[in-house]
Image (cartoon, rainbow, N blue to C red):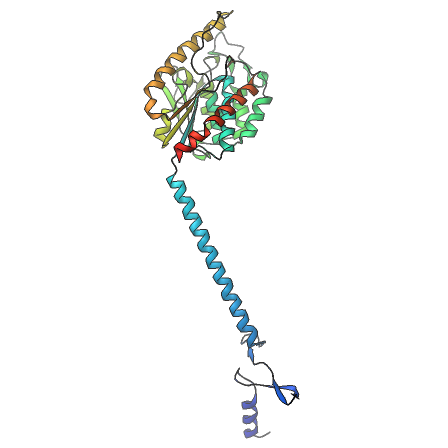
Length: 350
């Protein structure tokens, strides 16, 4: 083949999409069938029909349009949710002291959860610090309830055999272990819900507010009933005991933490009149503590009236705070109190 023929042959090859190639089968019904033009894929040398490519392009554009529309819908939805969250007022929940009666707090939280209400801040004292602290660390209400229902006093009380020379009849090591098994070494910065609790320093007589450190240590200190449990000695030389002897419902902390709406749950309520004196020295001592505590709480409640939106007292009748035999009763009454007031709470937070 000479140079001219070689040149002509090169010109005849289908090097672009501009040529039409006759169908090898020739003419049908007097017409010439012409194959679809083919477009080479430059990198691989593969040929694709032009019509298929146009269809594919339309499909791609349609998918991109759908994706953009979906992305816009998701963005609008997120903005709306954030707006609602921003507009909703922050709810602060204070769970007061109350021994075994404090199991009512668990029922109250259950009622809130069922209504879709989650506190933005929680404060607590004594048993309120136990329930509130564990819940703030992310433990479910159901698990807390089952743990209380199965709890036996021997699991909680560790006798201090040197009680005549110590500051309490029982050590707090068992109590601490029970709580640590649930929340581990969680610090206040790591809680799911911002939390604070109170204790009292026996040396200075001042209230100690816990907002940092290990949550388990704070709960133990806040729950150490004087004379019953040994005080917790801190690195600063403080002897911390149950905060209930100074402020059993520390609702004022919630405003400082950022709450707009404050709900306080007092499971002890007003001091009830007795028909007869307790039949033991310990009983009289405990009655004396209850009377003093009730009077102080009433004064604090009146003082803080402007900062507390709802003060709730579950109907626990004559239930003792010093026994675990009626915890299921306390739970049910707390749940009923929550169900009865949850709409008021929702209305206030917006």
